[in-house]
Image 1: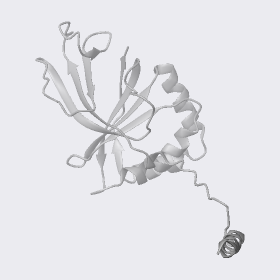
Image 2: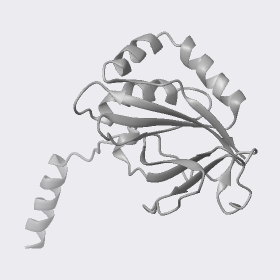
Image 3: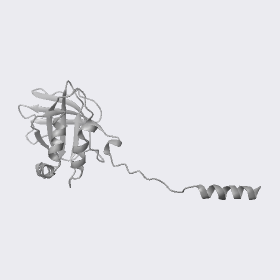
Image 4: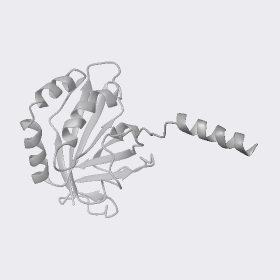
Length: 193
């Protein structure tokens, strides 16, 4: 009986291909992304009483960021824009922890429905090759409107990224692809130290 089992194991062992396939997943869309709830306030006059909310140096623009939908805050004398951002470029940790320059564009879709992952995939492939990282987020469609948000370290970092982007030979093709689904206003820039 032992001889039979030994022969069976040897014969099975010779047919067994002991190779393994390794699949590299380099598509950031595969991984879990955060959704950030943004309340952005633009005020006519400085608001000094809001020490618990991140503000620009002039205390006229404020931003509240959370991974939990809680948009109860209103500031008298300020215009509020509230939206949820779908993270396109996941990073380890919260991208809003340190000081940042936020680039916010209000956009209008010219198509009924679009797949964020499909529309922005070529753009994200090019920008992922840049030497410095940029965080990108896009809100859900709301009556054909959406926000496109980019986070940079500061204005110098933004200029470096834009120069690298416009120098890339594929940037025109990708800009054309992005225009096929919508158009955006000139971005508003705010630095939150």
